[in-house]
Image (cartoon, rainbow, N blue to C red; front, side, top):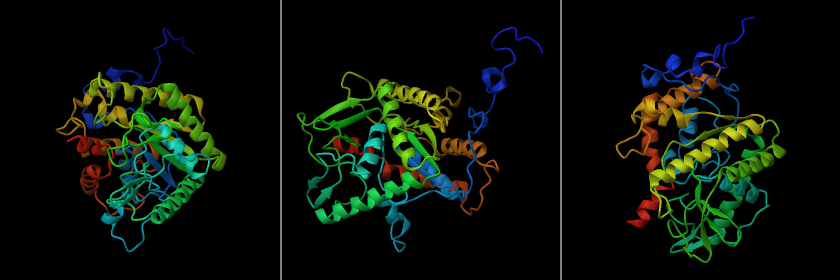
Length: 357
């Protein structure tokens, strides 16, 4: 056996920039190296997280895999209407879960372990859920309707936690707004999509690496107590913040902090936890080799070509057939058009800009 002359000698090609990436077309860049497990068509694959998680869900559906939806619309409701009411966007009708604290608190609420003091907003025409304010086009008409919908929702969350074979979570943000009474985390600041902002009751919170790691580990522990064999796949959303609440900080700098924290947290989590893995969708979209080609004219929204690149790598490394669908009659172009149209409707963050115009 030959002796290594230095720590880099004998390493595989993917460890070197010049051997695997230099001079390649951007669509050929593959930073995944290898998948950590293999998805099978019958596996129940659940998703949650930021807007970008929806791409994975939609692609899995289009490719014939078992995207696990536990909160479904009535069969007679048209798909377009169902999506407007939050059905099928994620595995349950929770809307965007931008932070790990939101995810953890949702799970605890579903099992009766946490009851926020500010748990309903009354507005003109009805009631809004503070924890999923953009879940439907109009408020709930009555408190009875609100309560019934929440019970159905919590049951769906429990079913997802207890039965999913794979749970995919897309880490989105570190910035959030919390209740000063009990630290309940809102997906949007009160006053943006409902409720009234009160400095005495509401505060700004920017999560650190240790907090993100601790919250996600607590969620994994809760989920594994109910579902010991579940595998967890983490991604980081490549979509920049639409706004920062840090008055002395540029949204560009705030984005760099947020994404760096989330990426480091994922690295620590996969070292700490068994069957918890990271998929580099963030690197595929934001890598300098793309020269910004995967972002739209606003330099924020991810173009369909970028999503297609991410999903082709996902299917290549995490499916047995390398990406060939088990069964699907939906062309990729149609998928790309759909995700571009869907983002404006179901990204809660978009409401921040509308609220300040």
